[in-house]
Image (cartoon, rainbow, N blue to C red; front, side):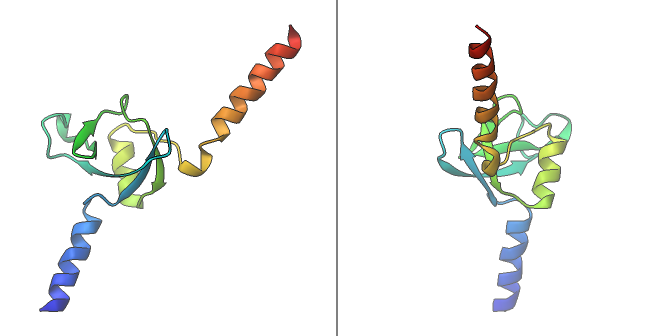
Length: 106
């Protein structure tokens, strides 16, 4: 019986129970999940739920730290395009370089 319980727990994790590790833009670690069980899930599209609060693709300001391929697929289906945590500084460096080029031209 203990094996069945372990298998059930494993299935629950694979099916979406807050397995995604995300980071806020301030670097705070948070857990998230994709769900279609909310009224804001229009046409059955998955919605990102973080700390029991739904976020639309436009509102979701998070970095991806650790997600499964299934979760990536659900994020994509829901219209989410979240940057990876390891790429967090990449955008800032590009902006700083662009600003430096503009300053040099003045």
